[in-house]
Image (cartoon, rainbow, N blue to C red):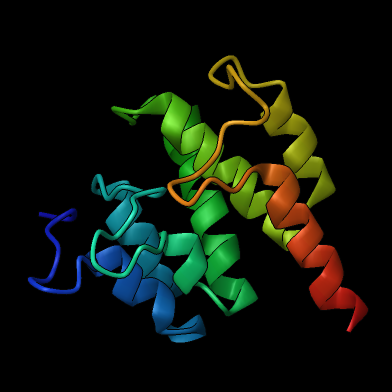
Length: 133
């Protein structure tokens, strides 16, 4: 399935798609539409799909697909999807999406960390630091 990890690396197909740059945006969306874990932590690598997404197009694909999945009520893990979408929107500096996600019924803790103990604020600071360079 979409969450099956490669033996030894812990990387899921979504992790690999996020590494692939702009040309993989549709693949990212398709994997998320079919149940891939948007905030899943790769055991061996210790990364989330967002960590693997260097290209802003991939980050946009991640946040759009996660929000769509929430809006269409096609998620098994609404709180985790909301957290992953919030972290991704913060990493993009997308203030409007951050504001919308902060009002989500599924967001129970604004400081909820990802698998590596980073919050939306960490990701927003990372964005600010990267754009200041």
